[in-house]
View 1 (cartoon, protein in one colour):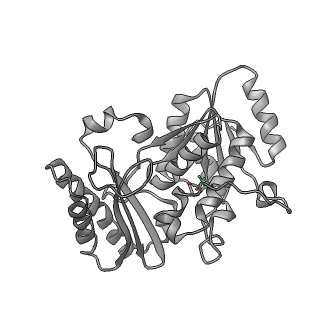
View 2 (cartoon, rainbow, N blue to C red):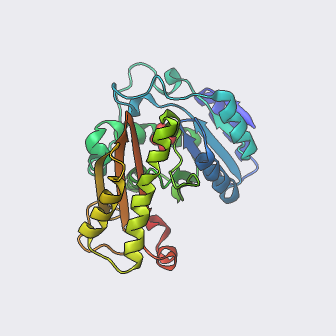
Length: 293
Ligand code: PAF
């Protein structure tokens, strides 16, 4: 596995790897890798001839009040996980490499970026779409892999590549969960052991709504209230939003259909936790086009 830190070195390494043909799969990350990231790298490896990952804690997607300075950066651990997952090339730039002084251009997906997470973290998605566009321009992948855990992020990135004709296919991979259902996230390390146990209640809420859905419940209000009441069993979890939305537009649905998404965001102490679940039977979800799964 090669590790490169500059844009020219990344382009040069890719040109060499590509000379024998084959497609490039790409897993952009901010490091602090866990089994969720590994599952993306494994999906990448089985779908593409060459696997590229990036590790870059992107400052532009953090608000000044957020955790940029304390975001974990375990370089050796991360590189070992990439190597074990069969990554061929890791792009590991420093901030100056990605954002030299004088930059004036950003990429904004205007509507989708203002909803849900975007209404609370108002500059977050602009940072994500800008850095992902830059990374796509550097790596030029045919396929890029993102986790369903960040549902809004992958919806925004799908819209971005469509609107800007970026020649890359976005693949969304299932959320990887701890045995008690907590969605894996690099930020879970911030939770104390007591909070870690409380956090699992979010998935209990989503699972309860899924159960109602499978019993035939289709009222978004009822599904939403089921999630809220289950999550509220742990008063330490302060709910930011619960919504049943369309997977493409992220707008609330009055008559949810299979493939609708239940979104949840909570605060637990100073840590924000987000999660989601697609509603539908396994057969209904499998029958959906991959863009809606
Ligand atoms: O999901 C993440 O880890 C980040 O938002 C991403 C896509 C790597 C952009 O910095």
